[in-house]
Image 1 (cartoon, each protein chain N blue to C red):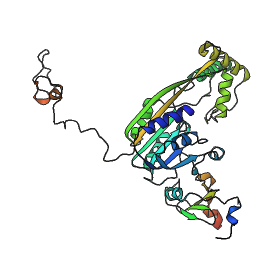
Image 2 (image 1 turned 45 degrees about the horizontal axis):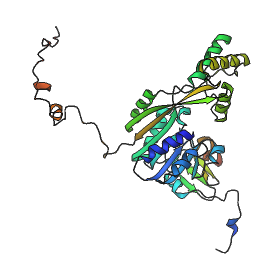
Image 3 (image 1 turned 180 degrees about the vertical axis):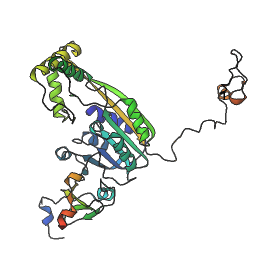
Length: 285
Length: 73
């Protein structure tokens, strides 16, 4: 979490701009907000969190709310940030759309979330142990989105200049048990609805721990766990932003820009000398 | 004001930030809310729901809102 707060702060510090009204979606206990307030570029920074117990630890203006039911007026926000919350959302396309709508034109969204490679070691170990000992597998680690899909979702939600980039963090733990305890304390124990309702059997768990330690043990006897952090950046569309020109609307030739000797291109081009001209396909009948 | 009652901590004494109230809308219908200062509620006529404000914190969850229709019955 601290890593994410630092990263978001750095990204935001590159944006030379003041943000009169900003919202932190899924503020947890306020770590990210405290860090970003320190930048001094945000005038009103509202913490939004679903869990009252966490929200109480935030120190700015607070709103108890759900990312999937955004309570903000259309075009009222200059900045929306989110630190490790959006991976728990059921309807991510809908949530992104709501965020984009709440942003003022040229407003910025900056959201870090966990990506699909997160905890792949734990997922593998649990699945294999369950298949081995119980003859079937149940999802124990929630599925998470892939960086390419997320870029597509940003576009679908009509964000301008969308970017989704991934960063992999490797954390070491004493044992797989320590990792699971840590996840539980984050409130990140299995949140899936379609999971097998019975808790993990002791034997299966022990086998999973064994598999985990075998494959992902570090030299010092500790185990490693991967967290993939995907950062989504997108702007609410605005006329001042750069846009791609329509194809064919260029007014200077690439060849001129490159200083190449004049060679006809496009429609006026002579057929290439090295190949036989290709006959255009003629449809019969 | 000579009366200094406000200094005593009342359970619901904290007031919500007016700048925040200004940009809040009903999370269900995205329509404007009426602020009932006495009851400390934000009322959505469109959704027939009243969202409570507790200790200055608006609770904007549809599941926590009070239905206006129940009240009338």
